[in-house]
Image 1 (cartoon, rainbow, N blue to C red):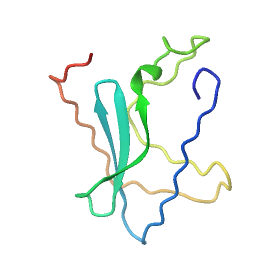
Image 2: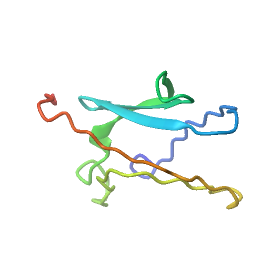
Image 3: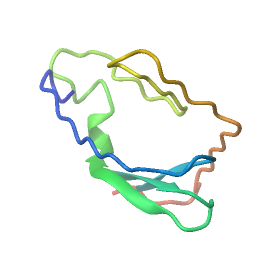
Image 4: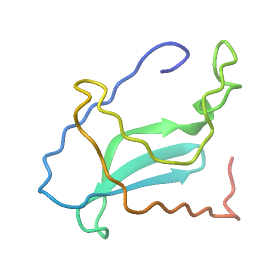
Length: 99
C-alpha cells in the first residue's frame, strides 16, 4: 500500500525442495530483497523500495506503518501453505550514513 493505493510486485520462482535463504539489504533509503538456495549466492527479487515510505510521517492519514524488524509469511489466497523459519539474524551497520 502506498497512501491507500495498492502496488504488487509478484514474482514466481520455482525452487527445488529444501532450504531457502532470504535477505534484505538497505542502502541509504533503498531496500532490496534477495534469496539464495545455498546461503552464498543471492539473487535479487522484487522491486527496490524507498524506505522513507515505511513511516507514519509518510502516510496520508497518519497511520502507523510499522517500523519493525522481523519476518512473516502469509498465504493470503488459499490459507493452506506455511513457511518454517529456523533462524533470523539482524545486523546493523552502526556507522552507515543515511542521506
